[in-house]
Image (cartoon, rainbow, N blue to C red):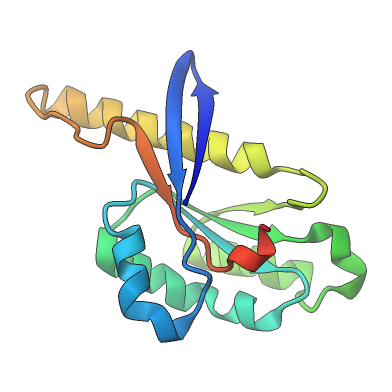
Length: 157
């Protein structure tokens, strides 16, 4: 688990980040990681076709466990575009099909990483405000924590 503090609209949001590493053999264990998550990042690697093809399955697993939460699709390792095994049209098409906001990022080059987390933190705060407006007596127990599910930790390391 990693922790990150991010400022969004004059509010501090503490993100607690979990990564399931995309390992099917640990499926029962990984469910515990994203149970209660408030947002999700689905990541595939520019140079790993299997990670791209696993995205729809991971999306289904997350939705089955936590429902409809703010989710984004991230293509990581765009610094390796010369070695890409996924066409731009395929990645954009998947995002459109799954109705997800799409980011191209490079953790190595620190490109678009903060934007992903700021977007999700903002979506979480908006959802929290809406819930509070609809049910003012509702006490939110996660204290502005956002869980993040990644399809592959090795892409972000």
